[in-house]
Image 1 (cartoon, rainbow, N blue to C red):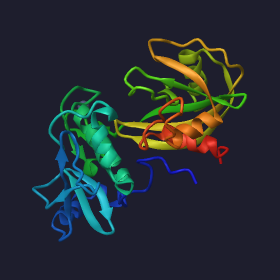
Image 2: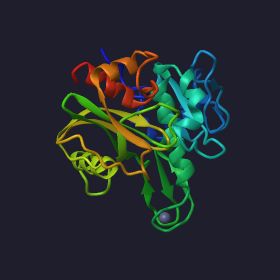
Image 3: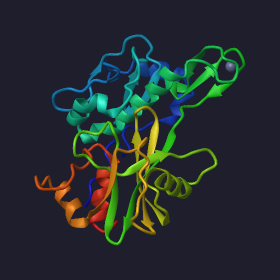
Image 4: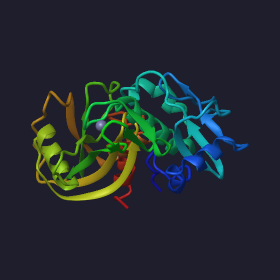
Length: 286
Ligand SMILES: [Zn+2]
């Protein structure tokens, strides 16, 4: 079985029915097992076992993350800027326990939205966290704003039994991964997959299929994994987007995933959905 995408999963009971009830939230602050997330360097803190770190409640932390087997979990708004990219937290992600990853993603993505959306987009006045931190309310014009999630397509293009993978300039040496790009307003997933592959690699595709998805908290994305059939293998690489792109055979992808030192490329890390997509492809996209 291919591994589930890192960060994907149910995580805590989000207890939506409690978010709009300030009296219920105030009562949860006093719960014996209520805990508050600890932050370090702009991200949730992780201990040596890869578990998230928690402390006793201090004051009235505005973000209600949910219930962990009935135990209320909160977070304050962290100081400092949101981490710009996953690569800035490479070591942290390498340590993080996969079972903790959904909560890590939810807390970081929600906090990132608060850090980047302090003012009302309608009237420009400051806004305040509302509904346990799952919205922000403007006291000036009455608008309510909800956390944004930005859809990104990430896709495998296949032609004649080979896969197209590319290198972004910031990748470590030897790394190749699936091409990706933001879905634009007014665009379907299928259209975004076709456009991104045409823009970045100059190839045309058909038969786009959805495979799996992953929340990506750098800062607020939803990665939508897809597969598509390329009509040919000649490429025109956009050097502003990619250092390189190449077609790889199944044996080459298997060698890369197996960590074979003779593999022609380094695969994406375990916390990237692209690695799950490669496993799915090797297994026949089941
Ligand atoms: Zn306003």
